[in-house]
Length: 110
Image (cartoon, rainbow, N blue to C red; front, side):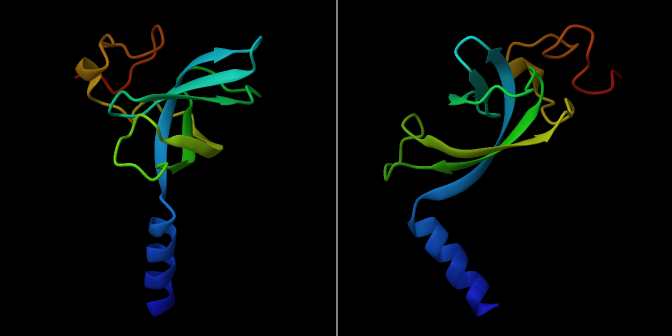
């Protein structure tokens, strides 16, 4: 248990953290993927592969040694899942009640 605490403290001292994002746009010509977190911050990374809008992406982020989020950098990404129930607060994104993609609900309609 001590080792795990040490390891977590070491990772934090490097300014690394994990974050989950939703793919909001894919540009095959530029080979870029635009992702957005639940606070609305957007980042881009190279490597379109088979990403589509609505996919979830797990990322390792670097805080660039500053408290501001806008200068953080994406170091590593990995496909997480295609699960549009992850974000349920559609109003903060300006999405419709049917979600980010046409006819694909973000959550079961009550």
